[in-house]
Image 1 (cartoon, helix red, strand yellow):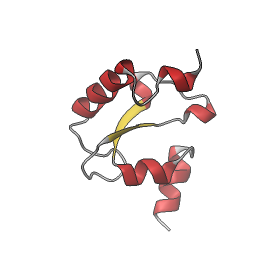
Image 2 (spheres, one colour):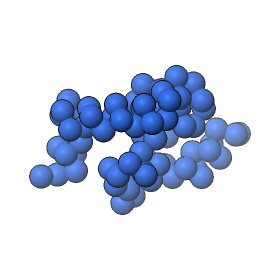
Image 3 (cartoon, helix red, strand yellow):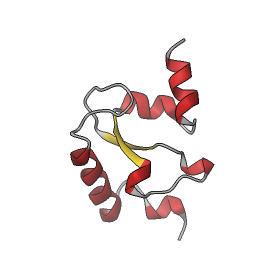
Length: 81
């Protein structure tokens, strides 16, 4: 089974993970503080990140789509310019 199929957005397993992370983080975006409705990988899967809870954070759609597969330091630097 591939990583993508393991965390398919429609899978029951991924929905449970997503809900758990959103609740853990108080539905607040880790990157900007706005209301979160997605879950983001701190270290992207494309850069060897995992689906473990310690690598997942609640995130708003805007930040999640803006971050793409960049590392946190690169994403934060791009936001401050």
